[in-house]
Image (cartoon, rainbow, N blue to C red; front, top):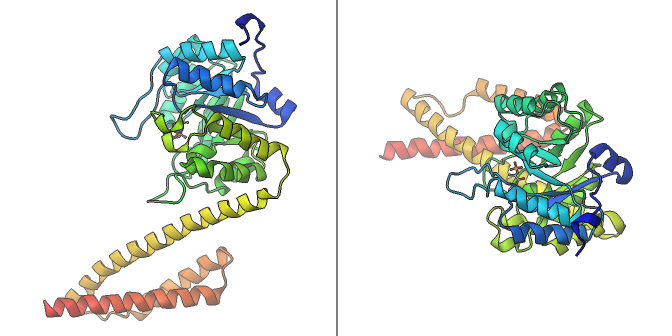
Length: 366
Ligand code: PEP
Ligand code: MN
């Protein structure tokens, strides 16, 4: 093992990293859990010169109370030990002004803002003020909902506070229900951000999009194909036992072979991986379509009972014409063929009328 004195700290400025290698690679556990876990991960990652930052969450913003909320500031000692041994700069998530001061006090080299925090402009402003005059990179994850303005607004708050090393992380958006991927990638949102801020480095976090370690490489492959400026990936020496996000973390060896496949070998597998990723996105949209049809039918049920009470006919010609007009316009905007959408809606309408008749007959029988 190298001693502290001989360790060369890797480059910390994101602009220089991008200039040197064309990508920023951040890897490490979802959460810092123990000294051994942090150091073991860092040492395994240090074997690859492509890893630019070691990530680990010290404070974890959990959706539900009672889940593991992070080890707190003790974790900085472990991260700094890992840095002293390996030379890899360290990164953590900050979610408040206090977190910023603690992270800076402990010499953190980069901070990122989590998806839950980005949704709160008050908190972002507070964190941005705390970063004023500090020259370390700040990476802003997308908010939970696909709102490009909110994401861009958060980034602009940091720019206005004078943060010069700024970047974004695409980690996907909360889907409405059960879905093939943990978070919906909706690639058009980060692409829109790229159009608006062409100089902003945007990296992808395939771990939180996938939610499943087996799917992380295909998301990473897609991100690379779309020209993202790097990756943030969750890596853990014992993923099954992880205290947070156990199902999506990769072993260091899995992560490093993923990097080899992505960046070093131009292989035929790429189009297979792209096909799998595209199919997963199609699955997610199908889930949303069925979910939307189910919700539509629930509303139709309520409408049926109102029509029944008022003695109205199931078929309402004017309403149907209006629906068709609106749908035709929407379909045109989406580039869908009018005959396809007409057939689809005839079928939906037929089912909806049949369903309402059934409801009304049932209410007579009762
Ligand atoms: C994380 O990076 O571990 C994390 C909590 O991510 P997100 O904010 O994207 O949910
Ligand atoms: Mn995580």
